[in-house]
Each structure stands twice: as structure tokens, then as C-alpha cells.
Image (tube, rainbow, N blue to C red):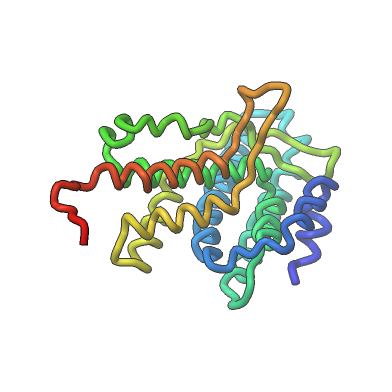
Length: 247
């Protein structure tokens, strides 16, 4: 069971609670260790951002005193949620997407922000795996969607009390390093295994389609899966065929 402090005090939005129920049966056990580490890297970056936000404003902004209690309380929450997250995911047993998002939303990181980060890590890792010539030759950028992290990071105490802390200076490279290390640790066939692992992670992502404003579409799952499948096909085109014979 998860901490009631997180499920009742840190996650208060009705939509978030319904979202968790939606993913109660989505099994992520096979890649829970990897998602755990990558998620912790995002949590650490968001925590340091909020901590820096407090340090800057507490010394130079008198009006900040009115909201500082909220910020300090959320910093304590972030430490607590991260600690419980580590404890829970180090335990053996089945892990679901609901389990993962309980700690993500409780931190609080919005699910869209989280999907954007994981997607950015996957894309960054793939780009480092293949040459620029390969990427351009097969026009692979056509499968990429936005990863600019321009949205602000918000602190929530309840559904009517929130505070923007500005944009986090996200470094997806930290998550990429964790992904690459994970691949190296479990497989000797690095390039093949990485595509399979990235596909497994991509299956846990969400899509964001907007019928009224298509330019706002962020189909993270579909784009990542399409990219992996096309790379597999294009890798075949790169293989020499002159010595292949009928047997």
C-alpha cells in the first residue's frame, strides 16, 4: 500500500485520482527498475529547481513571505514522496503504472510533463546511438514531437492553491545516461537490446491529441513506437546484401 499522506494530501485533483485508477492494471514490472531511476533524475531536478526558487526569492522579494510557507511545505513533501518512492520500488513484486504515477503526481509533477521528459530521454538516447547521417538519410526527425519543456513547474497544496515556480532547466541527458547504463548492464548486444527496451518504455507513455488545434498534438507513445519500428527497417537497408544467397 502507498502512504495515505501521498494519496490523500499530495494528490487532491479529481482528474489525477481518476487517472491513477485507469492505470491500475498496466503492468510495468519488467522495466520498473529503469523507470524508477529515470523518474528519480527528474524528481531531483525539480526539487533543486524549487529549492533554488526559494533561496533566490527569500532574500530579495518581500512579497514572497506570503507564499514561502507553501513552498517550504512542498519541499518537505518532495523529500517525503521521493523517500517513499525509493522504498516502494526497491521492494520485489509487481509494479503498475498506477504505482509509478502515484509518486509522480504526488511530487507534484503533472503527467503531461512526465511523459514529455520520458519521451525526451528516449529520443536523446536514440540520437546518440545513430549517426547524424543515418538520422538525416531516413528523415527520422519527422517522428519527433516537442521536447522544449517551456511549461512552468507548479506547486500544489490543494486544487485551489497553486504556485508557479518558473520553468525547470531540464537536462534529459541525465536520464539518457541512466538508460544507456541499464542497457549496457543487461545485454551484450547493445544496439538491438536498446531498441527493445525503448519500445517497452514507449508503451508506458501517453498520447496527447488535440482535434481543434493539431499543432498542439504530442503523440509521445505513437511517435516513439513509430520511430523504433522505422529504425529497425532502415537498419536492414544498411546491411550489405551482395553476399546473401538462397540456401
